[in-house]
Picture 1 (cartoon, helix red, strand yellow):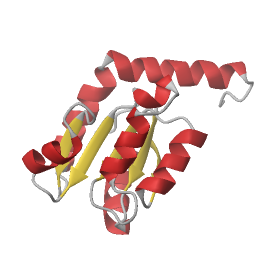
Picture 2: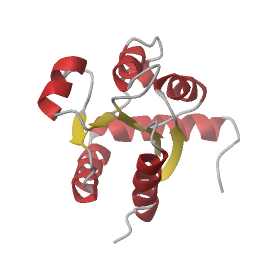
Picture 3: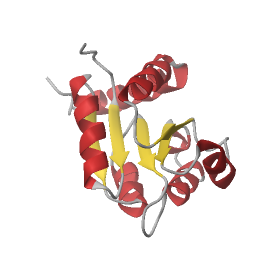
Picture 4: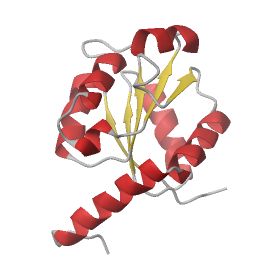
Length: 150
């Protein structure tokens, strides 16, 4: 069943197969997505563009998901600090929580990704006030610059 998820989602994973799987699922639900292949390229993307949700792998070469999330939470821009994050990994969720800190990540999802669980998390996140506030702020700022999509 297709839903219309508001906002933009950045999918970060060094595995092309994982990015394709997640993006196909998100597109089937009506979500707009972009992708990055590692934490550092994702960091550059979130600084240059507005996203309303981040789905990131934990284990990646270079900047891993933990370093990416730490950079986002330490950012000077309030919008970045409040970006909802779903972290996915083949590492056990309890171990991942210890490595990253539960206060930094909104949700953990084990690999292989269960799309039904991802759907539940998306519905929970997109109903939240913090997510709606980010979408509204992005829409207002894009509307004020005259770049509003038709």
